[in-house]
Length: 443
Image 1 (cartoon, rainbow, N blue to C red):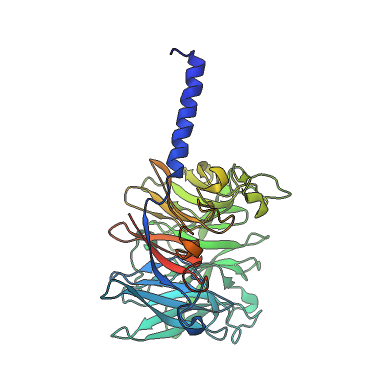
Image 2: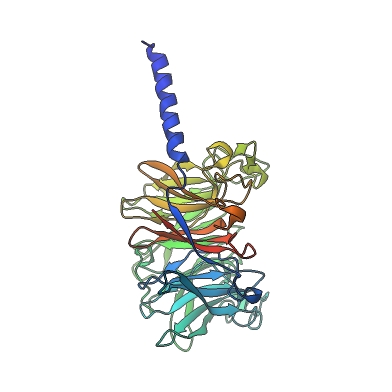
């Protein structure tokens, strides 16, 4: 059959579109193992609602936090001799001097000590009672006990909280992006969404020391543009952050006495259901091997209006998020949308991506989306996905098991071991009171 050239072009376009649809709809390419279901102990003493991301130490132990009803835990999950996993709570937060609501991740130094941030500290806070802390957990020689230590209290010394209050990120450091353990003495960086010179939040440099850590503000925010989400520090020491208005880059001078603030991209501000086709509510990016920046916007995009799943029911942008790429330098940075979430019928490809992405040695990006998927949950199933040169793939659809015993609503992205197995958490689902899970995905 000979078709006119215009018809052949149309047919080719449809075939390409169908190929893209097939690529984006592949599901359950990995096998899920539930390593632990929370709330397995009386009164949920083992914690509930893990929020990720996880940390894996050189021995294969997993560390993370749970946050529920204003409290929370730091936990460890270790493989046992029978092929299972054993959970242990390293610290319980109590809404007192040790804070409450630990934030989403911990870091580890070369000695095996853990560090993290938490909100709260009502007993020592001179402001609203939710100033926040930085904590350290030190293991005993046999790792049978862990000592909890508050190493920094936000808003404790500076008048009017001029050094920031209420942390909204975990800690980062030079080398974190490559997976190198923290050395225990170099500066750490954290974002707050209150305090600072303009009471609009700040980004702090924390320097460990005795009897207390020292803090200095490297960036003050203002004008309803408080920092949000975790910071990313690249190999050259530049810091990337995000607020409601923009993605920004902070570059230090030689002596780190001054940090230059450059806007990389401004965001569409959803209002009265005005669409944001290139994304809104973006999160800090990460760098790929070619120097480009890759990240997600949790809202916006071109898709999301489906009979059984309408993104506009949950936000005003009309979309369910995008995966983006920024190329260029400084203010000349250009953006390209790599993938629109919820572009498949009823969002079987996932909706509302999590800010925490990871990348393998070949440049594939792995992440989670907290909603959507192939199991007709309406809202709250979620997926694990991969994006690379071969397109977008759903690796697992949550709620594939009865009563969502495999978990639902993945938060915190995934991390990988040396064999390519992926590890993450779900905030709900599991076998015990929908209290969440830790899972492994095996290729």
